[in-house]
Amino acid sequence: MRLLLLLLLLVGAPLSAVERLPSGVVQLDHAEFVASEADTPPLAGWQRQALPDNWRLERPDYSGFAWYRLPFQLTELPRTPLALYLARLSLAGEIWLNGSLLTPNVRYDTPDGRMGSLMSDEPLYLTLPSGLFRLGENELLVRLQGARDIRSGLSSPLIGPTEALREQWRLRYALQVILPYVILVLFLGALAFLVAHIYYQRRFHLIQLAMLTGLLSILGYLAIDLPLARADQQAIRILITTCMYWWLCLIGYRLSGARGHAYPRLLHAVSLLTLAATLALWALGEAGDRLWLITWPHLLLRLPVIVLLLRSAWRRRSPKYWALGLSTALWLGTQVQSYLILMEWLPWDSFRWSTAGALPFCIVLLFFFAERFILEREEVANQQRIAIADERGRILQDMHDGMGAQLITALRLARREDVDKAVVIRSIEESLQDMRLIVDSLDLTEHDLLPLLGNLRFRLEPKLSALGIRLEWDVAPLPELTYLTPASALAILRIVQEAINNAVQHANAGLIRISVKPAVDCIRISINDNGQGFAVAADTPHSHGLSGMRLRAQKLGARLTLHSDEQGTQVTLELPLLPPRG
Image: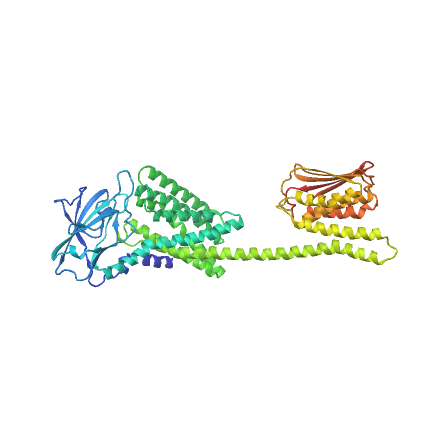
C-alpha cells in the first residue's frame, strides 16, 4: 500500500512541475475570452479568463467555438528566433500572431461527427516569424473548438527562445506521442513471439486475446483519421481496453498460483457490467471521456492481482515475477492518475502518465514471451535429440534381435557340414527380409499404413509367384493412425509377414489373399490362405511364430484372431483408430 501511495504522489503532479521555466521565457497566464461561432474575432463580449482554462469547470454544458485574446508587450524586437509552446490545446484550434495565421492546416470537427485534427494528445510547438513582431503591444489569438463530452480547454502559452522551448516540447512530445509507438513496437514484438508459440504448441489461451485487444487499443490511440466522432471513439476504447484488462487480470491471477473461484467470478461480473453500462450509455448518447469513470470498480479489481503477483514473487524468489508485479503496480498507479485528472482533482493540463506507465510492463512482457519462446525451442530441440537417439537405439536393437540373430544362426548353420545348403539360404533370406522390413518401417508417410503394405507387396509378390503362389490384395482408403510410429509400423509389418511365411512354409497354399479395410472403430487386416489347416490349440510348428504375433499385437493395443480348418487359415489383425491407453 505504501508503494502504491508513493506512485500516486510521483505521478499525481503535472508534467509542468517537472519542467522548469527556462530563462527568457514568458508565460501568458491570463487571456480575454468570448464564446462565438464567428470566423473572425467578435468586437464585444470579451471577458477576462485565467489560464489554463478548463471548459468542464468554467462552462460544462458548452460545445462549439470560442476565441482567446492574449496580449503581450515587447520593449524591443527579438534578436534571436522566438517560439510558442502549448502543453495542451483541446479539441482543435487555430493560432494567429498579430493577425497572421500560424496554423493553416488545422481541421475542425464537422457536424456529421467526423473528427478534425488530433491536437488534444500532442503538445504544440511553433517557431514564430520574426517579421510579425512589433514594438509595444502584440496580440496572440486562438480560435478553439471544444465539446462538453470531451475535456476541452487551453493551457498557458509559453513564448521564448526556440532552443529553450524546443527542449520543453521534446520532453512532452517524446512521452506523449513517440512513447505510444514504442509501446506498439514492443507489443508487436511480444505478439510475434506469442504467434510463434501458438504455431509450435498449437494452443490458444486468454493471453493471446489480451494481447490482440491491447494492440487494438494502442492502434485506436494512434489512429489519425477515423470516421467517428470523438465521443464514439472513447466508447470503443473503453470496450476494447476493458476486455484487455479483464483477460490480463485472469492471466495474472493464474500466474500468481492463486486458487479459488471467488475473484474470477467477481471479475467476470464486474467486467460484464462495465461493458453493458458502456454500451447502454453510448446508445443513450452519453459517450465521452468521463465515461471512463464507470470503470473505477474494474480499475480497483486489478489491485488484488498485483498483490498476488508480488506475493508469488516473494515466495518464489523470482526476479521475473518481481519485475512483472512491480511494473504492473506502476502501470496501475499511472492509470489512477489519469482518472484523477478526469475527476478534476488534478490540474486540467497535467501530463497523463498512463501511457508512460505501460512502458515497463510492455518491456517485461516482451522479455517474458521471448524467454518462454527460447526455452521452449531449446526444449523442443532437446526432445528431438532424445527422439533421434531413441530411434537410433530402437533400430540397432531391432537389427540385433531380428536380422542379427538370424545371421548368427545362418553362420552357425553354414559352418556345419551336415546342414543342407537350402536351410542356410532360407535363414539368410529371412534375415534380409527382416532388414527390408526395418527399412520400410522408417519410410512412414503421415501416419499412412497403405504405402508400407504396398512396399511389402512389391517385395513378396515376385518370390511368391516363383513358388507358384498367387497373391491377391483387396484394399480400401484408410483413415490416419495418429499413433503410428516406425516402431509400431515395424510390428504390423512383422505380423503380416509372419502370417504369410506360415502360409508358405506350413500350409502348402496356392493362394494368399490380403484384405485391408476400415471398420467401425478399427482398421482390419486379414490374411487368408487356401492351404491345409491346423489345430490352433495344438503344439505345431506355427506355435512359436503365433506367440510372437500375439505379443506384438498386444503391445500395439490391437486384437489378433486366428481361424483354421481344412479349407485354409485366416489371420485377422484389428488396429484401433485411437491410440491405446497407457
